[in-house]
Amino acid sequence: MSDVAKLANVSPATVSRVLRQPDLVSKETKQKVMEVIKELNYKPDMSASQLRTRETKIILVIVPDITSPFFSKVLRGIEHTAVENGYQVILGDTENDIEREKDYIDLLYRKQADGALLLTARMNKENLENLSKKFPIVLACEYLDNLDIPTVSIDNVSSARKATEHLIQLGHTKIAHISGPMNIILSRDRLKGFQQAMTHNHLKINPAFIQEGDYGIDSGYDQMMKLLSLDNHPDAVFVFNDEMALGAIKAIQDHGLIVPDDIAIVGFDNLKIASIFSPLMTTIDQPKYEIGQKATKLLLTLMKGGTVKKKKFVLKDELIVRESCGTKIPNPCIEDFISQ
Image (cartoon, rainbow, N blue to C red; front, side, top):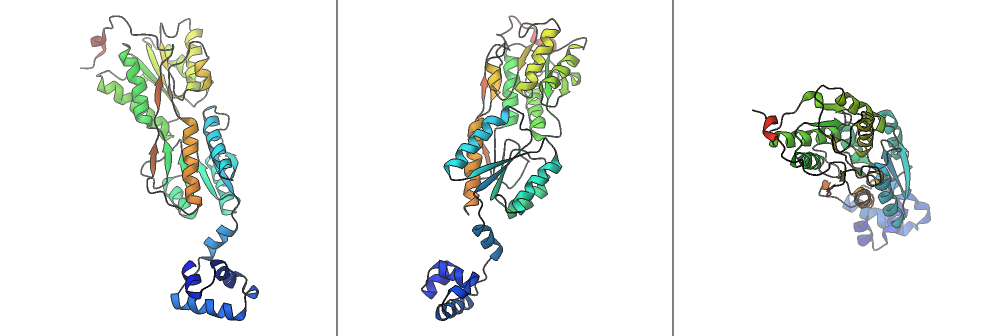
């Protein structure tokens, strides 16, 4: 359109009016512009033009579970960045239901939002990539392998490995893992990090020491009770998130044992309660606010017509050491548990 305007010696706005509201343009101007359009073989993208003229200044944010404390700081980072740039946020809580996720995506097709931040990646890869060709899309927190869409997260494999290695360095050898739902890539990656740490340190992985939870405190309690029912229960547990870790600690205490003297616990996410619950919880800190902030900036770039060449943005996590792991066990007999 700018090329047409330059050759016709008119403004791009005049070219736009010739195409959309020709009655508002003089006959001479209209003829001049149409001749240049024909000369350049210019074919206006009317659907893209319609999207521009119907900009809503609204960002759609789809979250898997609004009750999860983890997402509150991510959403705060999104909200602050959006408002600073003149956008509003509408929130869609899927409650981990893929059909509800699709319902919220329909808001894009109905032109009720300019782009979407997905804090959940339950949709299959092909559908997500097709969606990203039609609308500005950015993923945050969750992700899919080899996805050609901007994604902001931490390295869940290395952070889980770091948490498990901390337990090993303290002298623990019978280490269990309470995972998240295994249909979610975050759960699979954190399990992978746990397994890598155990294997690298030549420690046996007891299949009975891996229990699948569902994110919540009650689930952490129940899965820990299963571990405690074993004849030879673990002496340490790496838990998928802080909420389940709280449940695990309560189960240990109800069983008449002490954290960390009898069983050490490491959580994940560094929720506020991890720093005030007794014992104070050792956990992996995710830069939650920064994840929301970075993802929103990327989305704004896309919505303004820019491109994002780099697709995967991995932010730094940190192991926060507190009381729930205790200190190094004196004279640990690690060789007794080393695999042959």
